[in-house]
Amino acid sequence: MKKYILALDQGTTSSRAILFDREGNICSTKQQEFEQIFPAPGLVEHNPNEIWLTQLSTAKLAMSSIGAQASDIAAIGITNQRETTVVWNIENGIPIYNAIVWQDRRTSAFIDELKKQGYADLFKQKTGLVLDAYFSGTKLKWILDNVDGARQLAESGKLAFGTIDTWITWNLTNRREHVTDESNASRTLLFNIHTGQWDDELLKILDIPKNILPKIVPSSGVIGEASSGLFGERILIAGIAGDQQAATFGNLCLKPGMVKNTYGTGCFLLKNTGEQALESKNNLLTTTGWQIDGKRNYCLEGAVFIAGAAVQWVRDGLRFIDDSSEIEALAASVPDNGGVYMVPAFTGLGAPHWDQYARGAIVGITRGTTQSHIARATLESIAFQVTDLVSAMKSDSHIDLKALRVDGGACKNNLLMQFQADLLNCAVERPTCLELTALGAAYLAGLAVGFWQSTDELEKVWKVERIFEPNMTTEHREELLYYWNKAVGRSLDWIK
Image 1 (tube, rainbow, N blue to C red):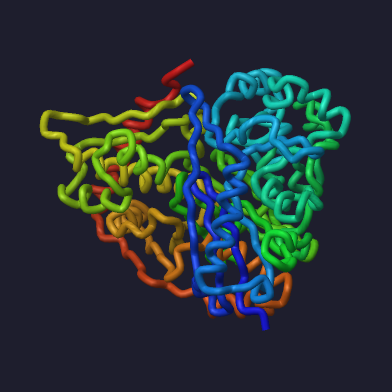
Image 2 (cartoon, rainbow, N blue to C red):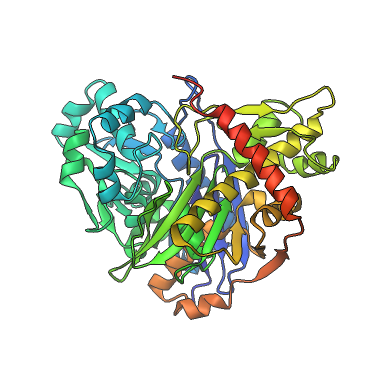
């Protein structure tokens, strides 16, 4: 009997590999950070080769640390930072440019041109997305337009485009499989979420040749094998999902109406809407959650660009702390924020504002303001942004939130989780396993190969570690939200 599912969790700041057993327990985990490249303000890049090497290294280390062999692995599931864009030469496997990260804003001016030309409604209707530099399509166009010889290579069939799942799979399979799943495809501005196909009209508008796009495969299903040269024997690759859809699946938000939020580099709130692609009237995104056995499951999504990344900035930029985990104690050393509000719009604001030109702000500073107040305001900014998303979601669905399931590194922070429950005035459920993104990828792969027989079996695996109940007066909540909204107003439309 196979013992484990290997989940590859390729994130924005690190690559992680986790071995899960049948009970959903983490048997081994390894993580490696990699370089964040900032060529100019608003630009963010990664080295694709470093991403691949750190991901491969963590997988081998996770296995070797418990003596697991390839024969012990039932399947590999892959989850990834979405929208980050890689283009490589298929003849030599070398990327023709750095990966352009989802946070990157270099295509903002082009997005403005598309809006002026009246394309916003067409893109939203077909893709479920708002026109924004966040998504992969305009990043891909930028690479084709700005890297010497790129378009000629594309025309001669020598280039491949992919999001990070595609790049990892291509390397894992020794260049045999050029694929992506619908959850990742639905984040490109190139994919029609209603037909499940790359959209010729959108490709023409963005001037992107179809031949460089990956084949679309199910989120759960065997799509290839990891090369025996990597692990000694071949291992089935049987699950792919973008990180937020994987976390939704990992949180077992499998019924319409269930909601989860992931507290990572950014924050991502997803609500399962079943087989119905609901169109938001409040600037949320309609996205493919996953596609299994030919059935497509949709979600409404709100994206916050900067969440845990704001804590990293307090650590690395302000140097208030040496480790991100220290921010809770620093923030808890004062009873409140002292009137200080921080809007972490370092790369603009995502939902529900979608302001490419917003920038970060700290307001309400007085002579009495300390590091502790700024640390607390930073943590609180994460919860405030999530509250904005929940408010938009409530407005779209006219249904109050009964409970929020949470995951991601920052949800270990008890102060943040309690403040979130207070702002939302609902319970926040934190599971025992916080690696729900990786667990979701493992579930998708495991279901495909019979490691788990059904989602009913998965329900027994998911366990709650702690429930945070709201404990704040309505008056206090409304006052906090009033000043938060005022602070956001100061950050909007800051640069041109």
